[in-house]
Image (tube, rainbow, N blue to C red; front, side, top):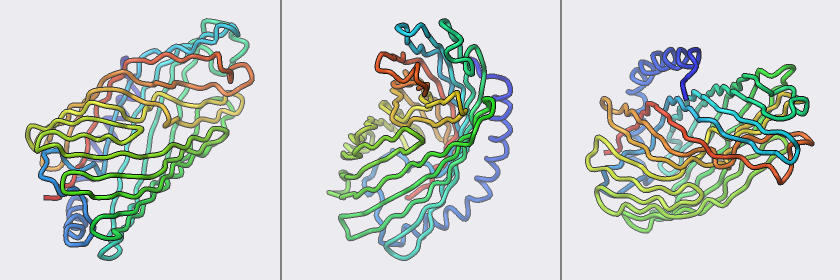
Length: 325
């Protein structure tokens, strides 16, 4: 699972340019955080060492070889994925009870695909390297109904462009609507629905569960479909064990070159994250990823006899986590 040199170079360049941008924008971000503190919008109330969710991130991921077994049709594929992604979100308070969130998302994924079967069935992706560049625009809204209830919604249109011959630009839309009930300082519940809509492949799933700050060190996120357990012995580092959306699962249409990432696939792994300086954190994560895998959309491959193996993965990244204390 070695990173290709161009991908590593791109990561270093983007990271070097983003860190000063984060630091220069820190005053604006903290001003917004202070405004939220003085508003009626309620975030985490418990005294936990687990930090607030990141408002910006930069990450490099590498997934090992996964096998696509279609032996009944004489085609066996193997592929691996290297990916660099970056995103940021800025919250803006509208009034004492409502806010909007505006952000951006960029990613570049590079695939190595090998075919050990009948090459003529998939000539566009056999023994080849290709890449997919993606851009997303996340937009969110939240409202504090009362001391117990919040309502939230978001949408993120994404566009993908692959390097396959004669590739068309494809579109994908992520969206969700949720309600959060704050039971007490240590426990809250969430109810909602999450949708992933892309060309020829839609995915809708309930997003329900609870978050429990067991004590200062332990927290449990029993929210389906991405549950996790977090241990933070101090405010400067934590370990997370659980499920997260995978970057290894994609839908590829070789005929048109269209591509879309499948967020209905999962990674199962262990994350270690430590504060680097002030509000900048660095994490490393490893485990087993791609519990769904690549999907080849044509008559020969879209069949129930297709099985996709999981693969080991590792990711390294930097997060910007604001302080609400």
